Length: 354
Image (cartoon, rainbow, N blue to C red):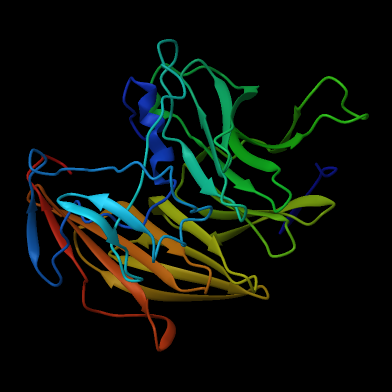
């Protein structure tokens, strides 16, 4: 393990339009019944038949999105219908953040803080690093964090990763050429009289990261991971005084991987290695690995989320004969963080290479 002294403080092709940062439509996601999910069946995805609906919910008192049960709404042919506690309805919106007319953005990284505020970060082909925030009062802020070398090919750019601390401060990890930089925001104060400022530092040099993920430990310290150009998976974490790094897996792992940390500090990493999807757990510096899916046709895309109770949801993908399949797995309610071996839902796309 190497230690790097410092004081505190995936590539994806995007649409040319900044509505690509439509990321923010996840603001209140209650699972609208716009798309039908069929249990244990294979469904064809016809992009012309998918419909999305949104309803204006401004008249409701739903600060955190959980208090609508018992209220009355006009919906479809229903007038003043009372919402049950098990209703299946969602409200969402989208907004344009930037028009991307001068610089194509990378795929943004998005997080929702414990205060239910949205934070996001991305880079563009001109080398600008941006952060974005949106609070419950609909106040938004777009800030330039830093500049890195320009790259006209967005598909080869390494993006950034964002986390938000309990005090609302954003913290970022992002690539600067072959190096990795960290950034933390300092709000306007007598110490910083010129307004909010980003403090940036190079914390690793010459590592050639291809993907970076960042989260926070229960004591609000940064804990991240990155994949290098040789496919090795590294940890990179802040101790409160310095950054340290070590190799988690010699790889080569998949280009895409995911990171989650629960309330007890258990670190979960999901990635593909060979023909297996691996769930890697780190508890008190002890490492364990579990194979949660195997296939000869694994695709790079994986997904991992964790709810407030520490329950895991994950997906892995396969691509064979131009057919993509997504295997969704979830922790069993009576056996926390154990995965069911039977896929919940399988989708088949008619689009080439998807």
